[in-house]
Length: 460
Image 1 (cartoon, rainbow, N blue to C red):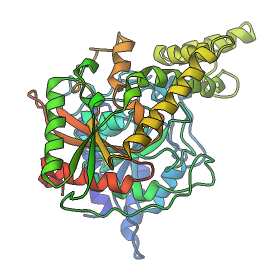
Image 2 (image 1 turned 60 degrees about the vertical axis):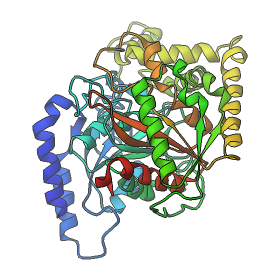
Image 3 (image 1 turned 90 degrees about the horizontal axis):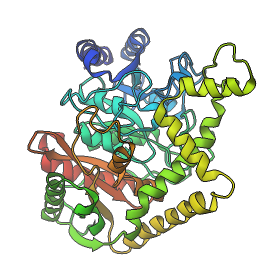
Image 4 (image 1 turned 180 degrees about the vertical axis):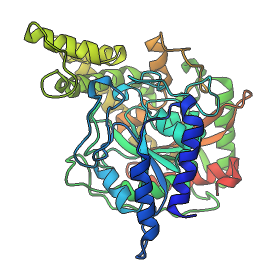
């Protein structure tokens, strides 16, 4: 299929379905078609993503296209240059179809907290697609893009991938450049791909990963090629008892699918090993202190003076700050800024933020100890299947608890992969989370591919 034909098929799906799904905030049909025709006219060697249509989460810069990070604060802003990951996609021959919806500044687990419109799950329009990269997941699941970029701070690639029946990778912290990406929590944010299959995720990941001199946190670690395999003989799969504890609200159908996934891996030659991650129970509390503290600092730049929307004719400078932020930032973003500011305030920093950082180190140590006994960990992504739109929106704590299984790998900086492992009784998708050793994405992807093909042989 030509690049133009591939793009036109995606644009047809967008025209037919996105009015109900709201996966995209911006589609640049003219520029995308021009790009596709240019690629079709090329006679030189093609790049690894030649002619494939990719969507980009709206907190990642594409030169000249709107970038709002899902917030009215940045309405009307268009960055002057591409993010490094976008430049690498273009160099590999990709066609960018548009910018996808998201929870405002990445702060949410359902994409209901977009500053513009909620996104619906294309597999069931009454349910959420997950968040914060829900627009990216919905676009791929609906056939509006071959793959998409998302960002993951505490689960924002893995959970939407699971909710939409996709594969999605959060790379090791520092593996992928954050240059040109709107910051939420700088020590946690990572860019990664979502696609229908693990092998497609691997193709995109191989293009965007690698050291970037524009990002001081990116690392120069050689990228290992994936050795695809048919069996898992000699591989040790860790099973953390904390991941299958019903006390964390784990739905019995989700637990049953995870147990089935473990059985499938064992049937393909892997050895199951029991491990413990004892500080996992503290991960939510630590995450929502570290992440909100960093958000408080990162979002202070949106003050009505230097960046973002400005309230007209404020009577005082204080009123300019107050009204510009209150008018343009959503309630959840305001809540997290306040939480983070409090955690960093004089007299409380040691009791809250510093204590959370100490817990974070303990969580990282738990994973280091686990790697002495296993090569990869497997567990759930979300304690439940996709919930109904509006079901949890009024209860922030209930929404935060949906991240119970995804925040610990983020705090530890290790890679994690979402793999679809079937449906529940209501035919809602369930995903399993594979967690790997630092910079061992190749192993993670190889295991994920075997697992996905066990449940969906057509994914090969």
